[in-house]
Image 1 (cartoon, rainbow, N blue to C red):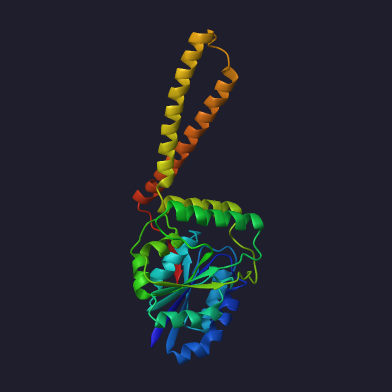
Image 2 (image 1 turned 90 degrees about the vertical axis):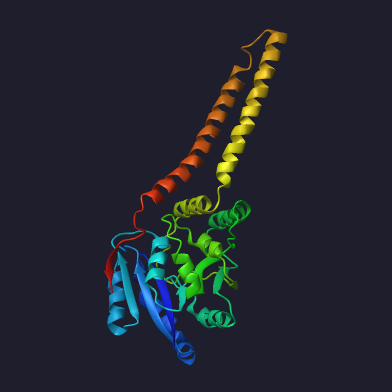
Length: 309
């Protein structure tokens, strides 16, 4: 018998807990035909609603359901890592509780694993239901990442993927505190099959990802998998040094010819403000990398568990 570990990160998803369970086990015939045992690991990321209570109800009905509850909200990345650590299956799948990751794709994903792929990943080909501004910046982010990073990150990639134990162990070997799972998936490599599907809107509840949270998450990805911003800051600094040297020569020559060293001071003030702004921007880039280094060297745990059922 094979064991499939289904990892479900949850944050305030009480309305979707049972719906996800019911939808997952519509594949029960597929599981039996392929001799697959299933364990469902709900990872509660410090929910404020009755998510934990709903999972406990399911646990009383089905011992295949497991609960890992955090002491507070540590973020989805920590929930994914905790679920991977808890999983025992030789096959592991990551899925969201809001049913935007359709369990009906599992038979097709398993077929490709049987063909020899190490993992089967999914990507959205449409962003139906998303605000246009969010979709626009998401596409910009993926294009930027693939230009400045050596790690390939596929546009529209979801966390929904089926992996062999070898891939899971490789991901768990990356114990960094600042985690960007989409980049980690690409960095570990292995042979991956991509499945495309149209975006599915969540069944119940509201998304926990605001525009601001997505922006911060994108910064996490850039600083985790590219040092190009630091290089860009150094190049900008060098260019402005050259420009400043040229302007000094222009001012000296102009003063010697026209004898009016004070003319043009408003434009000079504007230029000084521009240079000061760029300096602060470059300092902010360095500060981002420094802050990530600071968090890593403190060696704090990625998450803390309150309940493990």
